[in-house]
Amino acid sequence: MFGIPNSSYVTGPPPRETHRVTTSLTEILHLSVAFVVLTVDITLIQLRLGLSTFVFTPADLLIAGGFAAAATFTGFLAHELAHKITAQRLGLWAEFRASPLGLLLSFVFSAVIGFLLAAPGATMVDGFGDLKDWGKISIAGPGVNMAFGAVFLAGAEVASGQPGLSTWTVYLGLLAFFNGWFGTFNLIPVGPLDGRKVLRWSPYLWAGAIVFAALITIIAYSLLFLPGTL
Image (cartoon, rainbow, N blue to C red; front, top):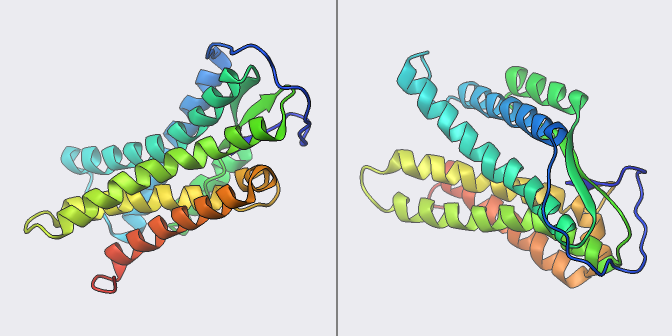
C-alpha cells in the first residue's frame, strides 16, 4: 500500500529527471519496527492455528521465526520497497511510515484471534506525476507479491508430489498464500489501497492483476486445506 501525505493525489507534468533511491534513519526505524511486529504476528498465528510444533525449544523458535520473517520480507517489506523504488525512480519523494494503531491492532488480532490484520503503515509518496506514474507505483507492490506467490506456489506443488516433503509443502504453500492474499487485498479498488489507482490508470491491467493474485491465493489455500480439489 502507498499513500499521499494530503490523503489525495494529484496529476501533473511527469518529472524529467530519474532520481536515485535514497532513505533516511526515520524510514529505516519505521520499517524495522513494522518488520519485527509483523514477524511476531505471523509467529503467533502459527501457534494459534497449530501450524508449528512450538514448545519453546531453540529449534522451534528458529523454524517458526524463520518462516515468519520470510513471510514478512516477501509479503510486506518487498511490497513497500517496490512502491518506494518505483516512485523515487520517477523523481518523486517516497518513504515508508508505520502506523502505531495499525501495528497494535495487528498484534492483538494475531494473539487473540489468530488472524493477520495487516495494516502496518504505508509508503508515503509526494510530488507531481501523471496517471501512468501513479499506476506504475501502485502496481509495483502487488506485482512483487504476485511474483513471490507464483514462485512459492510452484515450489509447493513440486514438493507436494514428493514423499517426505510435506513440511516444505506446508511452508511454501503458506508463503504463496500470504503473498497472494496480500496482493489481492491491496488491489481492491477502494480508499487508499493500490487497486484504486491501478484501476484508474488501466482497468484491463487491474482486472488481470487481481484475478491472477486471487488465483494464487485460492490455489494455495486449496493445496493446504483442501487437498485433492484441484
